[in-house]
Amino acid sequence: MQRFSILKQPILSTLNQHLIDYPTPSNIGYWWGFGSNAGICLVIQIVTGVFLAMHYTPHVDLAWSSVEHIMRDVSGGWLLRYMHANGASMFFIVVYLHLIRGLYYASYGSPREFVWCLGVVILLIMIVTAFIGYVLPWGQMSFWGATVITSLASAIPVVGDTIVTWLWGGFSVDNATLNRFFSLHYLLPFICVGASLLHLAALHQYGSSNPLGVHSKMDRIALHPYFTVKDLYGWVAFAIFFSIFIFYAPDVLGHPDNYIPASPMSTPPHIVPEWYFLPQYAILRSIPNKLGGVAAIALVFISLLALPVLTSSYVRSSSFRPIYQKLFWLFLADCCILGWIGSEPVEAPYVTIGQISSVAFFLFFAITPILGRVGRIKPY
Image (cartoon, rainbow, N blue to C red; front, side, top):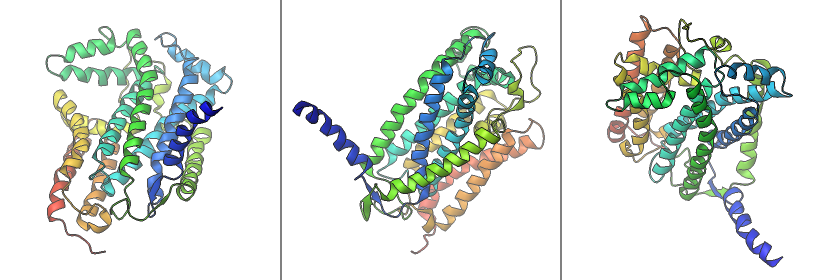
């Protein structure tokens, strides 16, 4: 009995330290609750994915039928499939909002550089996981999206063709490709869990940021019950929002062509990825050179990772930086334009608009460190 209590005490002490008595800035608002919502989304995706994998068949002749079997014959299968498919969109919504809040309040500033960089890595893992998951239903968009995106690796000098052959498992997108993507789609979420735990541990080491941008060790209160109740409100609101899509509009976020079985002999008139890939897809398409497009996508993540190094303002919150605040909202509008352009055909005037918007996207990261030195500071 004594041995049991000795083993149990450190666990309870750790949980109490990080979930109950954890010191939290007293002035943080609902914008700081999207991190916990992202954790809930990750759990939902893993749980529903494990159960879906029990009925899914990763074979080009059977994948489509197995998805239909889940929807029609498996008890509660329709709910699992809709929760998983729409859960990916919900996951990206809360993560993008979490990222936007971090950009607005400069949460990447010292000493949280490692927290920010881990968050960017998690976003990259999410994008890869979602892309290969989009291939698994083996619809028209699944097949042709996999063909187009994986072939981009061929632009990499020297090793490009070898990478494409390894991804395909042969000389075209076929059964070996589907098997590899299924295995990776099952594995990557657990890697995302590990990265998320590191992200959370780093956050708790340095403390949360706050709207004023002041040192987080000042004016702090316990996480429970003050902020657990606030997070609970956010969870309920998120559950209602999520449920509306599951029960009333389960297919609205998907592309109609992906409800047609994959056919290598029939190319869709316009290949469009899921909505959460559209801004990156627009940047990729804005450069006519394949290698340049791949480099531009890599530069998106490099720019995000470099933000902690590029920042030079001693004032973090945009509330006191009016010039940066206006630049931030222009940047957000530019991202929305890129999302719209990514869904349009590759023709005039969309190509020109996409190129201008892509330049504007990267200008934000170029101007940010300059504003830190010359931007006007609004008095408190």
